[in-house]
Image (cartoon, rainbow, N blue to C red; front, side, top):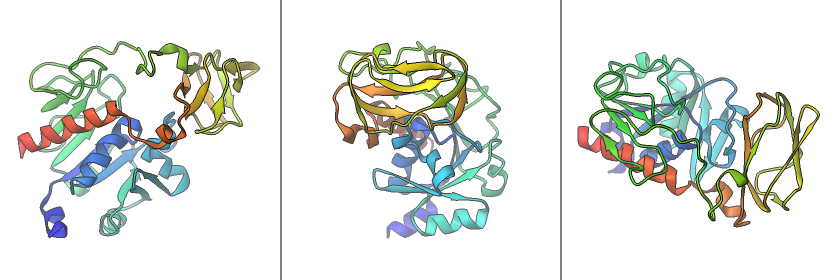
Length: 268
């Protein structure tokens, strides 16, 4: 019964495989949509515990019971669906759409501007966050700003402007985020889930140290060895100290995913 429903559901192509895109893919996959993710060759996700793009480095990535698998062709995409896995293909231009002919395309790159998505890319094109205008770039927009409108399906106009303020955790915003103090190579021997104390050395960029303002658990962290620019987000510290949160989809991502699912159901 479930298998037959899956075959009749529209294919959903999601551009991006970072934290937001992964939350959307997880929700739609569990709702029996045939979902395929596209990504760049060397993604730089920070919330790697809940980002399917990690499959590009490791072959597979599991997030809350759903496994994404790196694939290279249409045949491997179909095989992944048969295995009840999420196919992820390196395809920055999302050209696989011309082969899969998705019923839905979701731009979840979160670039805060449109990098090439067109309203003609699929029968239903959804943009997440700022940078998309309904009727010009996409058919629907889903609000991603941390506000009372989070997850709302927007039928006219655009999403709210990005505030640049991190998600508050325990009342803390900027204090719990690690930023690059200069341009250079990011190096760390820490791992997501490690517990750190306030003022502890977490990493270095070039010759400059990166320390945390607060104590807690490292919830997000770039892969070591990546070249970063001054001000690049390097990671996050969660003051709760709970390692479990590092590998759980956040409420914000769930709200956005709910908006995407609502938009698809509204259309179909």
